Length: 288
Ligand SMILES: NC(=O)c1ccc[n+]([C@@H]2O[C@H](COP(=O)([O-])OP(=O)(O)OC[C@H]3O[C@@H](n4cnc5c(N)ncnc54)[C@H](OP(=O)(O)O)[C@@H]3O)[C@@H](O)[C@H]2O)c1
Image 1 (cartoon, rainbow, N blue to C red):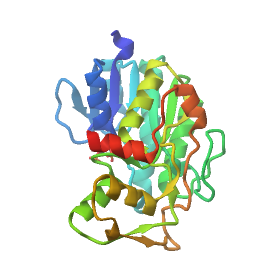
Image 2: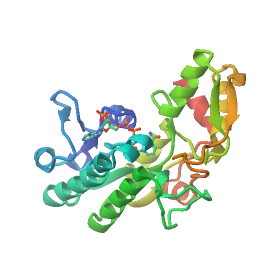
Image 3: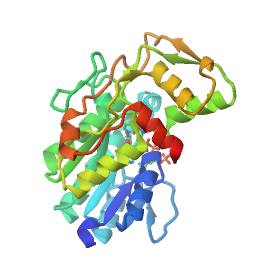
Image 4: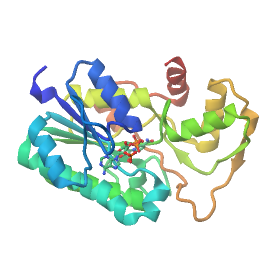
């Protein structure tokens, strides 16, 4: 492999970033990670993406062929409460990466992890070509980042994903740990989405790299489901007590939308791989 295959992963200690680092190292790619609170090693460097100079120096030194950008503030609640910080990290941090790439590696590819929250969630089954309309601070900061990438970098892939499940995933861990401790939980039945198996997401990103694809992708699961039924399926797949899961309705001020499901048909055709439904995704996670 040559330098054009070297990968820099932002947010390499995070949930998706750590899976990406492991996956691409195992595939033989040279991988370097950056994150807020890591020690400097041969394969990782501490770096705050809101610090342009720090980013410039790392990108100029490593000259990666591919940057997979996962670093960000992804908690809906935190983004609402700390709006300035959310814009500084999610939007300006992405702008800093774009600037550094334009200066030091203008031919390299940027793969950006974006979100279903760029849509308002009133209808669902959103296609790539539909005009987004975020209503949360999180969604707004991510859409601004998407637009900057589209306007300024030719070689990019924007991957909108949704509730990525697997060991380490927030929703998945919450459901399993509640069931493990015999806690009765209330889960929204009026909130639909397209949960995405981590293994399947890794495969989609691999295809984007190996087929040298660019553009906007809905890298999400193939099944639209509500949170309550998804939680029930997790319980069933992991042989836990389903009765601990009870139905609830979203409160009027909920940040969780009614229907954020994504249409994946176009992306599935472009990548030419299977997109997992929930049964297959959970079977895969159980087998890991
Ligand atoms: N997980 C999902 O279901 C999902 C769904 C849709 C989209 N996404 C997107 O995918 C990306 C990764 O998600 P994730 O679940 O892996 O999130 P995560 O676990 O929170 O990982 C994000 C990582 O970025 C780091 N980070 C935060 N601010 C930074 C900064 N200023 N400079 C450098 N690193 C910084 C975090 O460090 P600290 O922990 O120290 O802050 C963390 O290690 C996010 O951009 C998110 O918007 C995720």
